[in-house]
Image (cartoon, rainbow, N blue to C red; front, side, top):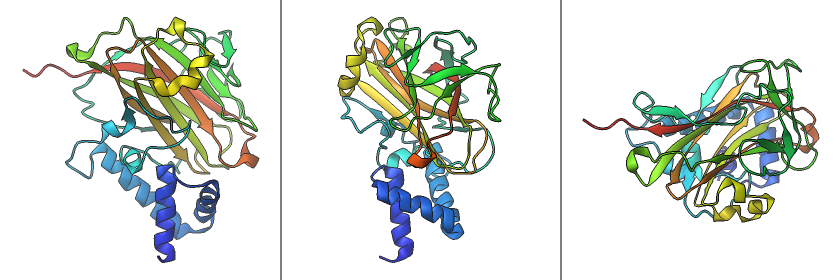
Length: 303
């Protein structure tokens, strides 16, 4: 295998989530030092993203790749195989506010917003517990607080946003549990199609960062979930994950979305939103979260 093929294999393993820490560092070094490979890498990831949105293929978008029933646990930031990249994983290298995610017949889907507690973090006095939330109607997390514009980052919407503090160990993340008991099924079907989106931004742009949204549909009610549930998360009846790797030099807000098919038996939807900086030495700058949205997607009846 020549070096060109080895580099592409390294990129594939990284996008698949099977790269070792040493391979990840090797890839980052290649991207920093080899401009030809950097352009090649961008083409590779953008082709995958185009396949996921259907721009390069007449085949249906591979949405089922991101939804798992009775899943085994892959780790907080581990990817599905390359199908996940084909479903819309994009590497952002430019200054812009970009929306990433599967786009399937957006013109005909109807979106019904679902209630999210403080989706824009506009209440600077809102309670913010540590750890897993006790019930619905609250945010909780590891290290976060509501702030106004700072570090050159203005809120995406309104006057406030959530600051995710840097952590030398672990992953800055927050949680919310949504009550699904009053959410109707889509057209009487056995599942409900729900989309979650959120916008992320970084205070610094000199390190690679990974933004992630995870959603778990569970049969328990919000009141019956507690911190112990986290150790049983592989018992969820459906889950979905979407991640976005952002390379150094990226500025502005990035909006990430994920869809999950929620079985009728689910009574709660657990949301996880987090960031990860692979380079431990670069874990000094905060990241920001804003404009969290959850919507029930329904398709119009066929005449």
